[in-house]
Image (tube, rainbow, N blue to C red; front, side, top):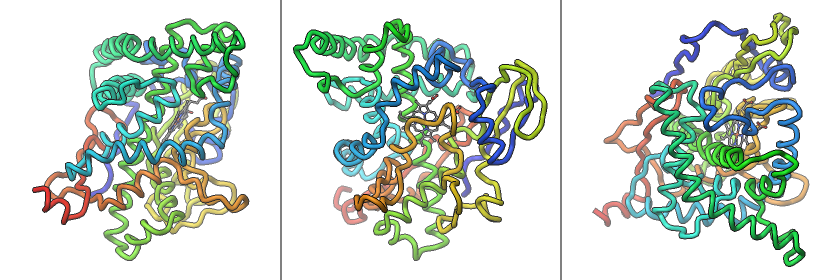
Length: 420
Ligand code: HEM
């Protein structure tokens, strides 16, 4: 079984200018004359969040938030925080002996999202996590509304309701705690190192110079909640599927996945290349000019950047670029995952955390594998395998080619026989 089919995303709008190929797409993503335009369907969530800001406003917001994502943060997160989060999330599924992979991926990453966004979980209970997952799933539905197959007005209403409830239950208390801490730092009672390292604290500390009202802070925090979970959950499911298919054809590599970190990370990068979170990025021309391929556009014209064609370019990735091949050799400064994390103005903040940094050759430190590789490795180490009695299903709620359900059995056969 191959992955879910890619459906046409543009049947409801006039044809935009299309940018194809890696170098053209790269140049377009770095061009300040092209303004983000994929998220206007759901302004109730996406208005003036980092991903939809442009120009000076984007530069200023990105500058204050980016400080959190220095490389030491990715390493710290992977070593100090993630192993515990992963073990705790996995434990009940190991007991049950089964899991649905997209749902599991979302749940395990909700903690990462909440840590980064600055949402406290005082109870640490499963019920609390359930609530955060439900809110964040709704925010994801809003953020990807352009590709939704549901009634858009209805989704917008649900997103607005979810924002209100999330504000009440999670954001307000998290905000109060940080405001108190910042006041104590301001008065010298506490040292500034004691401020939590998260987006909410950064926004509160800069709310006057960045002109951030309460609604803006709510949208930005909710956007980070979904950015940290949604794409990673989909990417994990695609990676498992590709690796499973590969091992059926190359059984000699199955054991290698458990022992060779470089190989499993190559698998994840290769899957990321073949399955970008969105196969296209949308932009609007801010002025009349020529696109990298020489096409003239006028101010206001829509431009589609075909990330899929960039990631499948045979001159860079080889004649079999459209196939999964973790043994592929990529030369030059081309990232193995292509443009899946974007590039230039809106480059993904989570690239290093989710995708890892590869083998560390200089410092003698172990490789930073990223959350996706660590997750996949852990699932495989617990004998995660397709459930022969339940087929995976494509996600029918979106035009994006993602898995809606992907049932797995997990744990050894002996453990499962013992439980039944
Ligand atoms: C497999 C996982 C992920 C994929 C494939 C992915 C993909 C992307 C892409 C393609 C963009 C740029 C969109 C554009 O140019 O229109 C982006 C932006 C962004 N991503 Fe990710 N992402 C992932 C995980 C994460 C995680 C874990 C975070 C954690 C916070 C995150 C935070 C962000 C943010 C904040 C932006 C906006 C940056 C800006 O506008 O300046 N992402 N992501």
